[in-house]
Image (cartoon, rainbow, N blue to C red; front, side):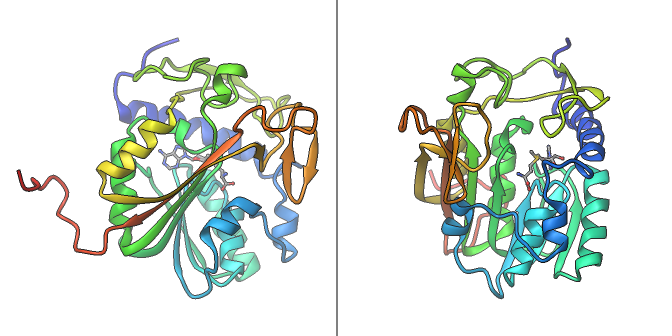
Length: 282
Ligand SMILES: C[S@@+](CC[C@H](N)C(=O)[O-])C[C@H]1O[C@@H](n2cnc3c(N)ncnc32)[C@H](O)[C@@H]1O
């Protein structure tokens, strides 16, 4: 195990990890690629409800993996752009966009410090298993704000960091609620979509308490509109989530035991943004 010496090293290590993972995910049963090819959607009830109608909107999907959700937003009429760190994932996403003929473009970039030349967007979306890969939440939140038009909305749906306390490894690997700022690199074998897959790689993961995420968004100038915690999950992360009801997984033996996910809706201020690094009034 080593300690992350700087952010760019961690990003390089994680890019290699995600290239390897993606190679497995592309043919795994976990990801319903066939459904998207056949005209279906991978979007889950929470983001559908929070994002709402997207027809005609410019939508930026952060950490889009190989694009299934991005293409699903495009299928609903959004002019969608997906961004991901992994070149393998982005190439696969572009192939799927070409095959399906959907209005989606894909960019390969680190979402920390990313400003799309195609910005501003009406909506920025990021969902499920995204924040644990990011060591610099303030830079991430600044990028969200810079990519939104004034009055545009950001929607985040993420697994709840409290799960990491009761189920170590499910979110960040920290095994506690408040994670270290500089987590060690860890070796991982296989992937959540196929634990037996013959891949082994290092990765860096961060534990971000809900308060740090909200603080970063507020500091970037976003205005919080909604914060939700859910006693269910869009994915069957744990065995205790034993029944699928209306598209989400519930703990039927102990309803209300834990918040499995949370969501944030935040709006970009309506006035012009100060340039990055500009001093505010004292
Ligand atoms: C668990 S997947 C998210 C999948 C998402 N739930 C979906 O289905 O669209 C995490 C994704 O984050 C990407 N990622 C990790 N670190 C990143 C970074 N710094 N910038 C951009 N993407 C990153 C990975 O390449 C991976 O595709």
